[in-house]
Figure 1: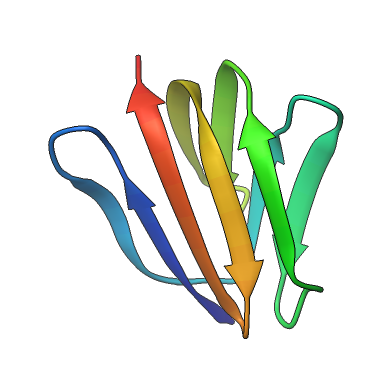
Figure 2: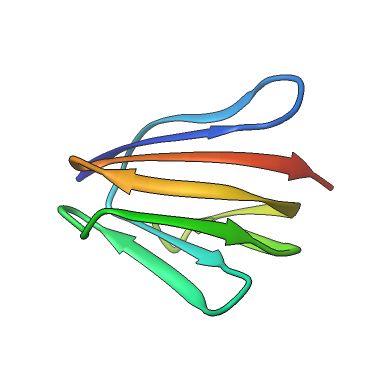
Length: 77
C-alpha cells in the first residue's frame, strides 16, 4: 500500500491509500505499486485506474511518486 492523492483543478478527487495505480503517460503507460522507484511524468488524455477498480477520466496532468507517496495533479474531463 502507498499514499495516493489525486487533485483536480477545483477539488481533491482521491485521497487515501492504494495498492496500484495505472496512468497513461505521454511516452508510456505507468503502473505504480508500493515502493516504486522515484518517478515524475507528464500524463496525456486517458484514464487513471486505481486498484483495478476505480476509473477517473482526465485530459492530462502530471504525476510524481517518491518515498511511497504518489501525487497526481490533473485536468478533469
